[in-house]
Image (cartoon, rainbow, N blue to C red; front, top):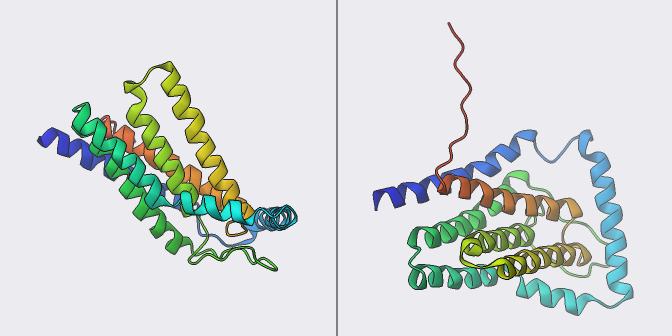
Length: 221
């Protein structure tokens, strides 16, 4: 029991350390980001024009609702319960659940730290509250789908693994496109969200397996 608790605690610590490592590059400001900001603004303008021209708002808003973190995490939590109660893999199920909850909380914290304003679009298609970077929808979709894949990978065959990879990738890609074409996130927001969510799952799983980062050898005095 103690070993199980230590593994879960260490996986949570490894996952929580992931965003702190990614933030060391600096805050979202300064001339070094100007080229990326200009590309973001051009893409968001073109994307929202396409949405208006083809009347895609209702479809995009519907996906926005379906891909809310609470729904994605509820679905994967149901799978966690099956892995726990049906397959008796208690620690693995708890790892998946704890990882998702850590991601859900940390991505909100990173938004507050970065404090990037959302896109300003003329004649906006949709309004969203809060800060923009990273995209919460993208981060949580990537985390939920990656967690689901890792959770079920040893329990399914080749066809099941292919389905996990394809369906999970589609959910993440469609969610990212949805945020951009609604004009509520820049492309860099959703890209960072995917990297955040997937990276946190990877770091957490390495902690779950008992991996520890190498330490630099001490210099002789």
